[in-house]
Image 1 (cartoon, rainbow, N blue to C red):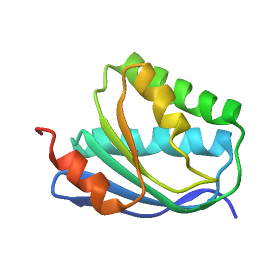
Image 2 (cartoon, helix red, strand yellow):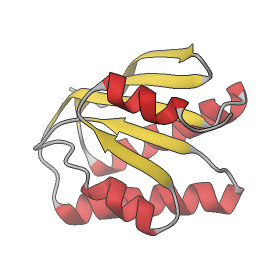
Image 3 (cartoon, one colour):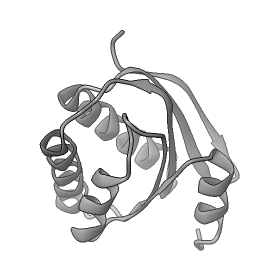
Image 4 (tube, one colour):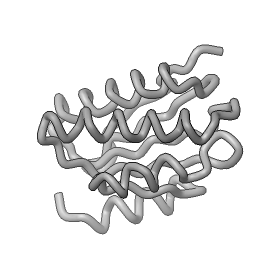
Length: 125
């Protein structure tokens, strides 16, 4: 199944997005850029991506490339986001988040949406 946004809502100043489908690096990067563009349009800087419904196994190189390209995209635009990714192995294991953190993005990986929301709410608007 193609990677897509199944649901999107604003909740307490956080853009919450639920993704569905198969994790493919090119599609994931496109989708993450789209999510960040939406956050900019809605004037929020906190994003929660729920990837629990994603499937597929991606190489570390694929994860690295998605994280590096997304961080570059955000830095080129001067956008400062707090990004919480909710997911579980083998599809989401936190490696991409670590790559993004190493490049200056405020990002964290969580196993539950509640943990992610708590982390995002700890940041000032």
